[in-house]
Image (cartoon, rainbow, N blue to C red; front, side, top):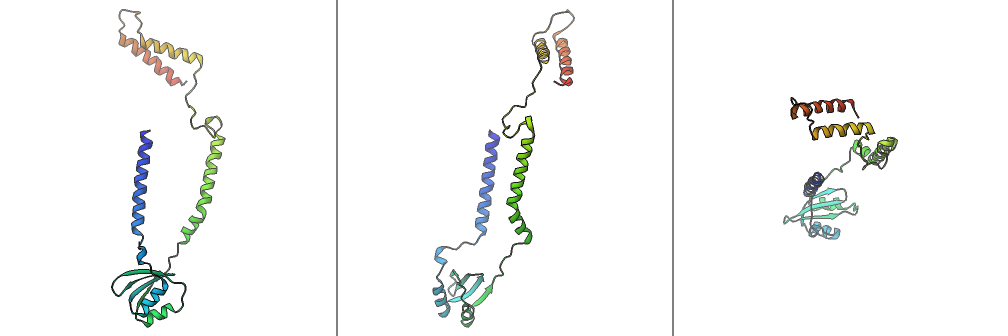
Length: 190
């Protein structure tokens, strides 16, 4: 039980660390940095914008006073002309294209997972009496025949109360003899 709790705690800590790492590496903009497109065009015409970075339809930039902003370009073909006309520095980001291998992995991963789960359960089903589909809690202890049980009981009784057959024999020699008998029986496999 303690082992499971430890695993859960470790996985939770790792998940939290990864979540925080990826959350902090992503760019964050407060809502007050977002401006409407019409205000953006007005700022361009009033020489209020110093530079912009265009990434697809997202436009991020800096005003003359250093304040950052972001807006959305609704595919306005005149925006670039206006930026150039008013002397705004323009930087265009190249769109990120995922690799072909990554696209293949993303498209095939659910199917491969489904196949793996199907194969796992089919193999569990074919195992027969060794557990089967729902054999998670079954005991794997070996059953003993009646004669094997009697011999084990005799050995156990011999170990519990030593026999007083001969005056030369000590208790340790009886235990050693019974241990040898026990080892021979256990190697025979029952």
